[in-house]
Length: 297
Image (cartoon, rainbow, N blue to C red; front, side, top):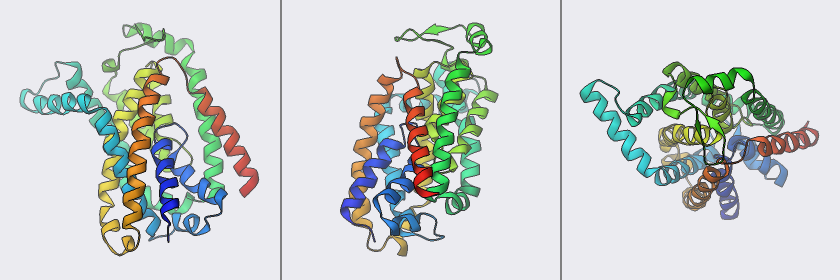
C-alpha cells in the first residue's frame, strides 16, 4: 500500500507545505504523481482510501507541532476565552483574539465538514492541482500588490499603525473587527481545493485588511491549528478502522517526520515574515504549477 520510505517523504512534505504558503494538499497530489507513485495518486481521489486514513495522522501531528510552538499563546487565549464566558466582556487583547479565532474558524470548519470529502475526490488529481497551484501564485502576488494600495495604507493609519521589527507598518492584530475575522475565515475555504494554500490565502486576507506580514502569518498559524486538528480527529476512525489496516506503522513514522518538519517550518516562517513577503512563494507556485500543467495536461 504505502512503504515506510513513502511515509517519510510524504510526512516531511506535509509538515513543510502545510505551513509554507504553497499548499500541502496540492503537493500531496503532485509529488507522488511526479515520482510515479501511481497507487497513491489514485487513492487521493477515491471515495474510501487507505491514503486518506494515512493523512489523518499527518494532520494531527502538524497540529500538535503548532500547539507546541504556540503553547504560551494558546494558554493565554484559552484562559481568556473561558474568562469571557464568565464575565461576558472583552477586556484584553487575548480575550479579543480568542473570539476572533472562534469567528474565523466557523466558516472554513463548517464548509470543510460538508464539502471537504467531495472536493477532495473531485479535484485531488494532478491536472487540477497543477492549475490551482498556479492560481495560488496569482493570489499571493495579487495580495502583495493590493497590500501597497492607498486604501490599505489608509486602513493601517486609521487603526493606530505599529511598526514591526522589520520596519513594516501594520495595524495591531487585536484591532481586527469580527466581520473581518469572518472574512478571513471565508477565505480559508479556498484551501479545500488542492493547490490553494491555507496559510497563503489566510495571510493575503489579513494583509488586505492592513496587517503586516508578521501578524498575518501569526494569525494564519493560530487559525490553522484548530482546523487542522479537528480535521484529523474527525477522521481518526478511518485510521483505526479497516482503512488503516496495514498502514498504522507507516502512519506513525510519517506523523513523527511531519511533526518535526512542521515545528521547524513554523519557527523559520515566523522569523522570515518579520522582514520578507509572500513573493518568493508566489513565484515558486507559478513556476511549479506551470511546469506541472505542461506535464500532466
